[in-house]
Image (cartoon, rainbow, N blue to C red):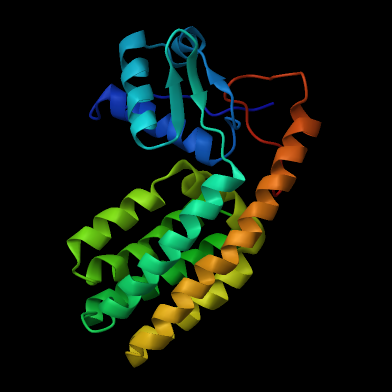
Length: 246
């Protein structure tokens, strides 16, 4: 089974490279919910010392992707139904408010940026490049959130979107639901162009709340699949996921 290799880029700090590589592995499902990250195994795979690995673990912990338990180790954060049910209504309300507020401030360059991001989402979905799809999806939302000009709201939303459950399950969930998401984002952009603040705020909020039930269902089915697929055996720590849409 093929696997992605860690290849140091000397112009970038090693801690940053390690954190980014592990983040991608978590987002892409190569590291599983609850899996332990073993320092000496990563040391051998990456051919680096323990120091940058430990610092990278702290970065991942800060971003909500792992938990570090003293004398036990570092584990990929378990995502629970409670996490999702608490986060999504809050995020829906705040992003809906950000959309309504941004409607008055959006400039032509912002509309152009969202058009570009949506085009990127369409192209990535066609190519089944879901990492690129996810990145363009983030750019679309960040454009109108930042255009709201409310620094407090921007900061809170950024923290919510950075949560492990948003990173990991946005990426995986969109692999099965991108057609619906593309249609909704086209409608959102059209409402921004029309400067229909009330409607665009309601649609953004509704879009995220609809995702709530889908995420809960996905979490349940994904957990069952992981038990069936991985049961008692564990492969290489950074092995590629199976060649299937999960």
